[in-house]
Image 1: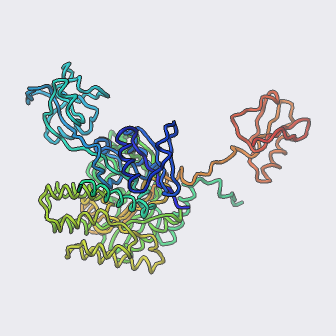
Image 2: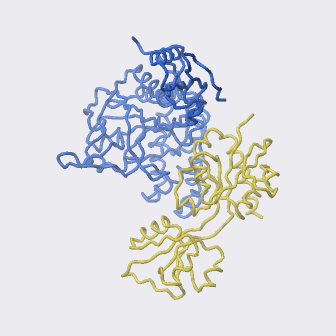
Length: 214
Length: 382
């Protein structure tokens, strides 16, 4: 029997969307749509095994080889810098990593900038590139609250539509980088399952190209 | 009397260590034994050569700042006499102390490696690569030795004419096999389609040497890159003649710091171990930083990664758990243990107060009790 390709999918909407792509190119696994509490789904015919994990954990599963392939947002890859191959841009889950602040915010260059964020590494790198002295405030959620309450001057966060920002009287000051979901691979898994993985990649990549052409 | 023991006493990493030492000796390498620490100064000056910049330091009795070795190569390079005629061949087996990228903690890592320093020629480079391949073979039949060439990479980047910062971004993408990102970067750097295609092909290139070298020729821009291909081909041919080369693959996602490495570089992988287990290459540029003219090539095998590899969990802690109580005759007990161990069974003798108090913390194949001068089986743990 040929070895299975283990694929870590992020729980939630993005993961389901990406599973849709895999299914469309012939790597479906019907049992995955049953609503039960199972975590692992496999299809021996196509040689794939899927499992759902917390989105921020996908890179860990892949880096340590528990999964051969995984789907992770570029934000996670930039933040944690896992030692993996980044094979494809899946062009879904598009958003931007942005600096945002209260409307009418004026950056006072002679003071340390207070930055609230979940993405401390990305924020540090961004401001290091501008040689700016910053005070990082690490938060785990409701980042938008920080500038409103005066906890921070700006926030660094993912912006999809900008609705949350608008409703809270905030605006984007600067875009750091565009974000989308990427197909990542364990470096060793890639080598030993090379034929199967590159075949899957080709199919997915062709599918994406077709999609963007129409 | 010579000590004899069955091989399963040895852990995976110990077995590998022994076979690798035997292998390197066979090809005339001699062991280089060194102390656990070195002056911190050596590492500060060569920080980016190290896998991680964090180092455990302490003061010695004279107040000098010392470091627990994060790396062995630097010490060997420092202590090897410069020569462009002779050739030094060393191997080592040492622990190094590094920050683990995944856990952000210091880890003790066991390394076996070898260095070949001096007047290098195609043969000596090929021999080192053969030994790298054989090192992987001693661990598993499912291995891959991936090679790349820094001369090819720098030649290609030079001919395209990128700034240092652009080149390092491109190199990062090559190391991630991130062809889509290269495409985007090339567009933003205003590079032509031809250069972009070459770079993207290079990132995706992967396969057995003989099948892929023709693709590499298509990527080559002549001059330095052609020379690199020629060198790779010569080495590959020589490794073949030495009886190796079966699992050598071309892969340019192996990228090392250009300030230290030049020429051929390589990494070894074993199916079932999630990270590379062997890493090495030609590091003439490091020698130059030490003011030495010699060439140098070497590699290290991270044997601590074998701890969890091909794990066959032992069913029992001991074969026999032998229980006795306060009344048991010592002479008889000693005799019994001797009889059992002579039969090559492992025995743990344990004194208990009552029979019912047999401990559950020890898993044993057989549970026996010495009672009234006789050996009685109580029950068999499954």
